Length: 171
Image 1 (spheres, helix red, strand yellow):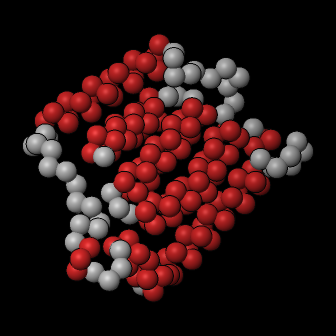
Image 2 (tube, rainbow, N blue to C red):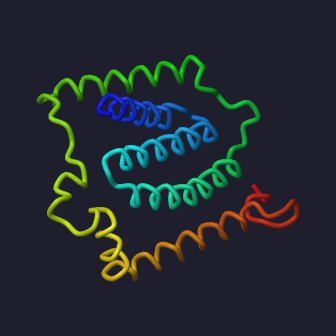
């Protein structure tokens, strides 16, 4: 399981390098969706199954908005893919910087603490106990975030509405 989680963390870094190194917004949005999904699987692997699922659903809504913006604002007919020379150069440079930073801060791998490590002392799982706190203390922020996501969706739909109307058609 530890090797699987290490592979997932490596996939997370590769997805983030794919976001940072690509000038085309189509492929950057795809890399961002991959990195968000892998990050949620890492959370699930460490015992936070409910929070991983909730974040994944929120990320799907956010990625829909990001992809709609990137598809609406991309005006190049032939975007550079991940196999282009400049993108490969930037990706190798970013991976080198991440590798040097990882080597610099390496202090031995001790593993991460799993949520259910002390499960004999608790009545419920660790991630389920946080749900009640999120809805009681953070309920207002949850409602505010839902409204902001809905507003972003309407803004994207207004920007990309039709041939004769919409803000992007004048550009």
